[in-house]
Length: 166
Image 1 (cartoon, rainbow, N blue to C red):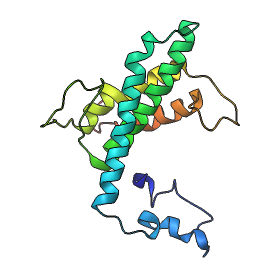
Image 2: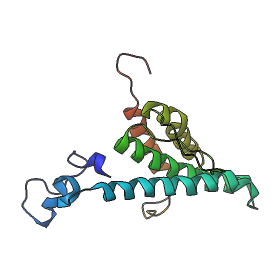
Image 3: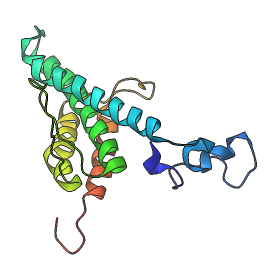
Image 4: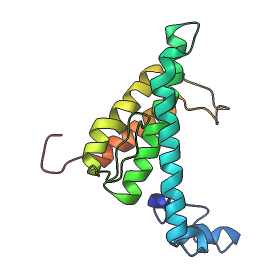
């Protein structure tokens, strides 16, 4: 996402003039507009909604073992944490939705980023660390324990409150 553009996380043979130079620019030379931002917002909340359904309906699916159920829920919680991480880093305070909606909310409230981290992102990633499989170096389409540990570290760094012990 855009939060990492123009940081040390986005590097490709720095200082070499190539066709990849555009990745050092914000938006890779594109002109961001309201439609682009709205699409990003909608995609994030579509993903959050899908994860919420998977998490809340997991107890109704006939998994063979409880460990298999926890593994599938861990995937959904990892993804929900990722969606909220990107939402908070892009937009600041966001609307928190942790259950599938039962009615239309015409005046949603926004939750401050630090609270979103404490209530959703960190617990979801901690659950993912506990239940996701280690995976292999070839695993690239399914969240792994290593990915969850890396994101958990990144999330903890984002929530450090200077001047406190938290």
